[in-house]
Length: 238
Image (cartoon, rainbow, N blue to C red; front, top):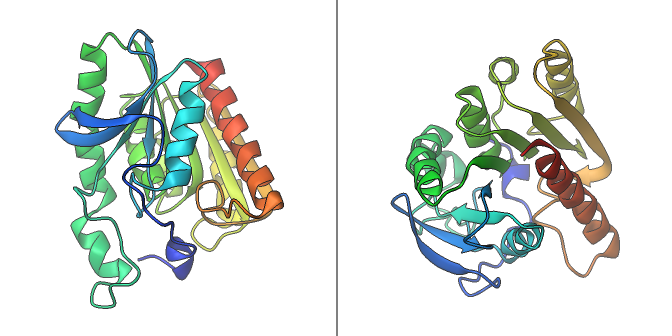
């Protein structure tokens, strides 16, 4: 179901990380930050390690500084993947936390955002989260989407996308290798009504945008470049 790259470089989770707060939104606990007066929201859909990852929350804080209301839901109800739990490998864990469930859980979150006066919503998915985002994009429940090193997304998924989509991929990635991303690019190019961008980052590996070491300047630089590309996409299309 998923390769070892999906589980490499696990973050040290910290429920107190970030400058935002945790509140209930659409039935889920969610890390939220940003002006409550904003009419534009960004949904950040985590990888299997969940919403308490410090780098992910740092990214949420950065996006909020650009004027967006940012939401990072806990799709796993306090049960993120734990690579130290030998009795529950990723293939077993993911049966309890399929992306199809994440998609269904996103619907009330989207409705809750609309009830706050949000008029445009973007969603960015990392790894596992990209599969959730593609389903939102196929149903046009969001106005723009971004994949960051996606997992489980298929060519048929991409064929169904109805909103502007950016795909940010890694050169060294067994989950979504460059060959697959090139297929995504070809499909998107055949859909002129859907704005799209596919970019492959050299020398990067799966998970590089949120599971980088803050002590590695080159890793930080590559992650920050992807963050800027993601933010620029939302600024342009929301």
